Image (tube, rainbow, N blue to C red):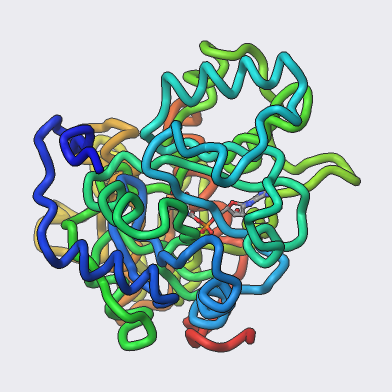
Length: 358
Ligand code: TXA
Ligand code: MG
């Protein structure tokens, strides 16, 4: 067991304390542990244990047609979940480049599955989603438990993804056996899901690794819904990642002119907010929890990191709607706009009960 190979986001050696070993034992025994990753918090279970996987679906209220991502501690463990030999030679090369360059990190690859992974994890698909998270706690948990941990985001199905342990506590609470608090998730949006079983490879979900970065390594990719007959990413339902309050999405600069004190407003950056404040005749948004920006410094990295946390905050206010504007459609902005679009695609939904769909 090579603890020194673990590295934190800032390069520091992680603290492998007894709590993580205790959490690992819970996973090995078939329990559920919520844990931090660099993207969002995950709800982890032994990837080889169908009973544990069934609990994940039940606790999240997640439909069984929506497969889980298998988390590994390093690319050397890829064979535990995926059979890269079943890919075309070109796709094998692409997988190799991507694993070597972008793992650990927020990239999930769809690859041919090995029989040891239960059908429940993959919803019966012949493919499996695999990623190596870049968080020292996640890596230690996986390494000290079953080396392959199935983990969806630790939220009730359809609701906002959790970026803090507190979000998990609020949403799933006593339904999980343990929550590991590793502080706020750094990236803030989920991993990019890339299907390598199609030619060209297809981005099924925009996420923490921008399309531009992937294409610089392996060439052109397709984006979005798979054509009929090809395995789609079921998590890409039109309505997803949604707050309780209706969210109305506008193009940049198009947040409505009549100001409503019953609404909350979410801008990309301070200049864009200030232009609207001027039109509204409001001198300052300071201290107003209903008027927020995704990024104080106008970067998409910060916007992604803040997205779910701010939506969680706004969702606790007594408001009738959230008006949000799109962010620039480049780099991480595509993942942010994807989540905002899905958050806005149902006008009203109650916060889903944790066990609702099972
Ligand atoms: O950043 C992340 O990916 C987080 C953290 C916890 O790692 N996890 C996460 O998991 O977002 P989840 O379950 O919320 O989303 C998994 C996505 C879904 O859109 C699912 O449909 C897709 O991956 N997926 C899983 N297996 C697939 C497969 N075999 N083919 C196509 N899509 C798949
Ligand atoms: Mg999710």
